[in-house]
Picture 1: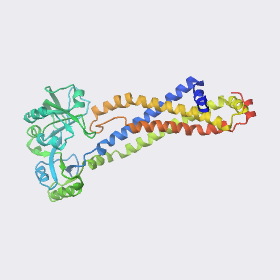
Picture 2: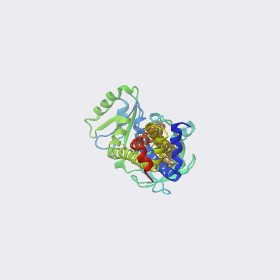
Picture 3: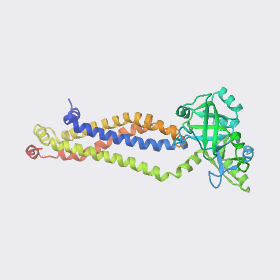
Picture 4: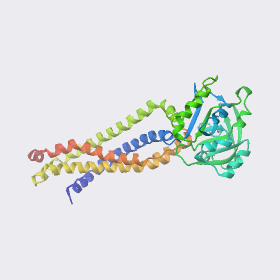
Length: 388
């Protein structure tokens, strides 16, 4: 057996302490992966946003409406391939009053043309277009609500009070990570005809697809220039810019999560360093014997570092193994079902997992440097005299 192998075997000299250290390290790695996955998933919407899609909203605030007639004007702008619109509805399932999911009143003929990444079966789409009370739901939301095509669903309105009845005409699936799979869309006309006259013919925002993404900046300026002299001005931006502007309000939280993920790893390093130092103190006499038998200081340091690398590797691998059922299947599924607007795609990224293992091993090596140096510099006589 070589020098490194002997060092690795020393890990199991105190199985209880090693097991608890590995478990503590694995929990730290799990927490690191969780936080980094939250950060990654939060940015997925912006990272994978369609480059040829623009959004136009009220210049003052996203929550203020704009006239529906603006859609026709936007469609006439050179470079606009298609435009649709949507209105936030804010419906709740009375059976699940505490569950949140997006409900949008949309323009049926154009919505899935602009959002082509949301795929609906042709038969379902045709049925929906003919059904005034029809609704299309995402596959994740369908599982959560326990509905299927042909079912009826009643939602309680929050922004638009009352009970609203819908027919589930189809279920869409997403081909892009930026698409929320936990939303329900229905006919804007159904909403518009049911609200007081003073609230009619108003929409929340306009979404457009352009012919050439490289012309987006010029088209954005052209759209807003048209409405500069209107009573209600607009702000147009790319889908990615809109997602980034929304996330800007949470920048402090994201920064805090980033810092906490680093602190967790530093705590892990301190735990590993303490465990390794305890092992070195307990085996001081053994190291003295090895030195007396002819082993060099380099060999002794290798024993210590080998133990640390083994503990770090085990902690990283176990932490990654735990992250898939805990983070991806557990928390991830819950977030996709309940917060799909913010986390449309919550998965443990392979890069994050690899980085977690690499950092676990690296920090373990760093934590072992001081104990390894102390062990390698022990005087043979002093080491043989030491007890405990």
